[in-house]
Length: 102
Image 1 (tube, rainbow, N blue to C red):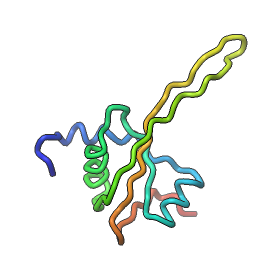
Image 2 (tube, helix red, strand yellow; image 1 turned 90 degrees about the vertical axis):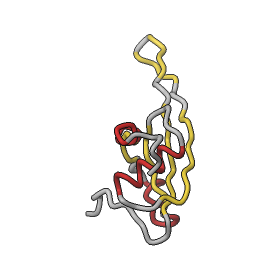
Image 3 (spheres, helix red, strand yellow; image 1 turned 60 degrees about the vertical axis):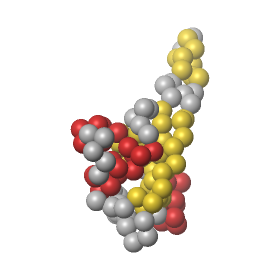
Image 4 (tube, one colour; image 1 turned 90 degrees about the horizontal axis):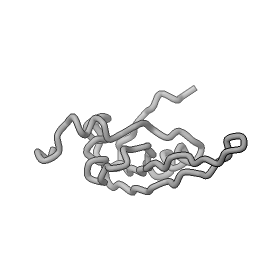
């Protein structure tokens, strides 16, 4: 692991998995898993955090910023906060089980 990035920071980078039909399909077909991540996280940090937490080999990381939606709260206009999403592709043969099997 890179000595420049401390382990405490890596533990805070991943905020949680995104579990949806789209993310489940991506995991089954391409070995690609979706996570909600810290807005300041870099691709390298995300990859290292996944390798550290799940003990798998990361192939690639794609990151995108999801813009918050404008919403009405009664008579008031408001805005939901934006967030950051990461698609993490694992090396062939590796997988992550979130315990969602029924």
